[in-house]
Image (cartoon, rainbow, N blue to C red; front, side):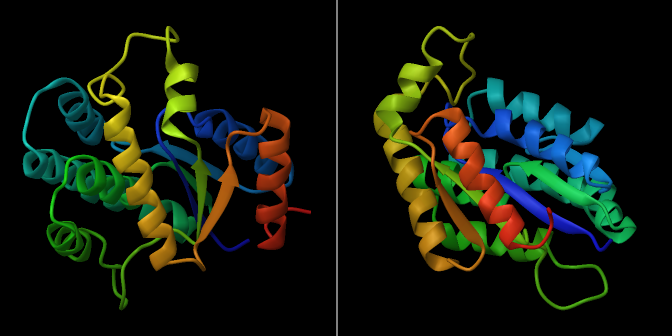
Length: 211
């Protein structure tokens, strides 16, 4: 089987982490080798950078530089080797999150993000950038996401942001999806968990990756 790359995107509380685990299980049951990973993170170095990004105060550019440094190590160490092996790579967040959180939420100039994207995501030995074959966008109103997160766990630096921040993040995702509609599949994350799962399965089956 040839490898493919699926990213899961959405604001905190949208439910993507539950569904990524479930999809990984179904893919394995149907014979796929699966690499399940996350960003920022996915390697020992990237996880250390993740801890800094989630806990320490810093400006938007510093935050973006750390996230893209983690992404570079993640790509070289995990994602590219997995795709070369023919794995299904499922990643909890990828570059669209940088455009949404650092670009939309923090207000960082997207031209800076585009430059970092070109530097970090060049395909090894080929033209173009390493982008997901499919991005599942769990779209949820920030107010509802905040209700879901309330009391669930101690919030990290991002989860503690006000609703207005997440409105900007959601707008960042919407802009990114509008720019690349062929890659994005919007899932209505306000539905029940099973309804979202059914919608997700329809999308993935449409790609020919599931029976």
